[in-house]
Image 1 (tube, rainbow, N blue to C red):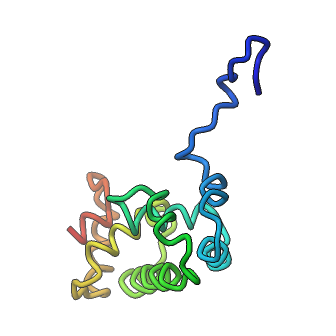
Image 2 (tube, rainbow, N blue to C red):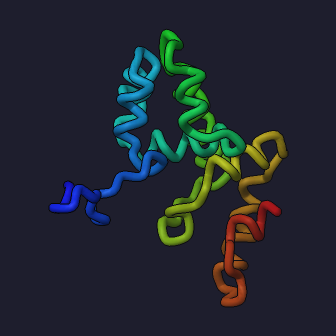
Length: 141
């Protein structure tokens, strides 16, 4: 929206980096269409892209894959993260698990041989400790 002096009003400024729908339009193609089919929620797609290419900007990754026939590799990566989390931490604790950067944890610890039972025992002990700030990084790191 433009005011009388032709200046863009502050409340309507659009940041290119924060507009996923704009990136989807700019990099439209079979890869974006397929990615959206697999990952219905835009937030999930953005999070996944951030994890996959944390050293690269999302728009660069999308440009690189814009003309790929499909997003199967992206979907398989997403499934690998989910499978790893469910196998490593079979007991769900929404209050502790929600909002964590699971992709980054997966990338860092996916090749480690982890004992889910021992991790569960440590989680239970740490939950009782009021001084523990980041529960999952405490047990993995």
